[in-house]
Image (cartoon, rainbow, N blue to C red; front, side, top):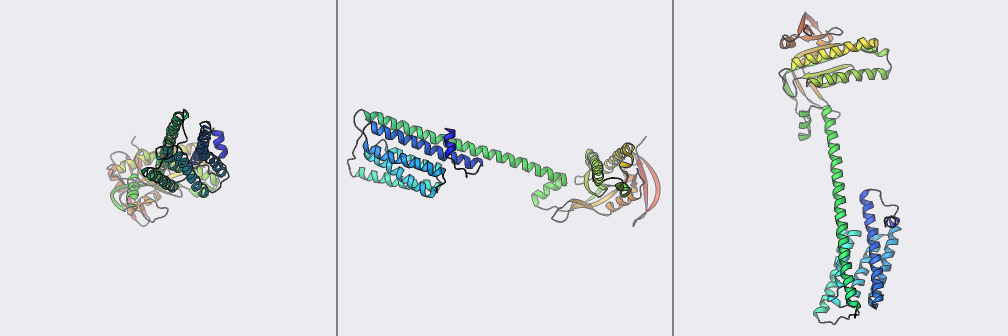
Length: 411
């Protein structure tokens, strides 16, 4: 049966599930109606019901024609109105000559709008319904006037024919119900699949957004469509820069340079993640991170210091292994206040501004290769937890003399 159905589906039907399902349904309807009408034509012949044959044989013929025309993509706008009109006339004629309004064939008229919904359209089903209503009103009017409808089904065959009519009506209505149920299940299955795909896509989008923005900022952006800049009074900023990066890059190919930067920055990302520090950005070979925002952290300086020491250890170990194939590093840290937010509307990024950021950069520039240079402000917050070697007041670009300390782990 599946092969027969597939044979009559036009080659130009789109391959998506919904179009293929509708095409299979249409072909199946035509095939089943063809079988039913042929069976009833034979039954009418056997019980000597000539008008039944006259009504069913043309219907069987036009149903087969519809099937063939559908395969060769003949316009359904022409096929369906003609077909459902003939279908209504066929059942009406068989009903007229088998008892009229009280004929047991007459209820079959109810199947034509149902079939029209399946293979045609809602508008087509409305057209078919109007035609059926006209036929019902016509028969009912004759019945009220007392018209004596002829009944050509007589004798022993009458009960058998009426039984087959009832069974046929039950079976076709059952089949229609199954078709609707399958269509519903298919639609719900497709909807569920689409919802799952949307859920996965939404999660992917959220994960991507969270990879760019802090969770709180991402939530504000989704809810309001914008992010308000906020001032944070107590944060610690970490700034790193590779030493002699330009010279080192001359010894590497472009791919080696990018791979090494990626390896180092990936390690930095993992390190600061352990201390819930917010990465802000990388600029060339520089790395900027901050602790204490967007959520308040009373241990912001302590967490930055621990992360800086871990970064220092990572770079030290890597230099031991790779030598000139990697970079040494300078690290600067300063504590203070910043403004954080998003500016612009395209390729936006969460960023921080303020004198604290500039001072952290000056701490990095005033550091030494492989060392962590911290400001007096940071020193006052962490001095009880680490060894801090006082360097004195050192002149920093555009900042004048600033108190600086080298940060080391306690022995």
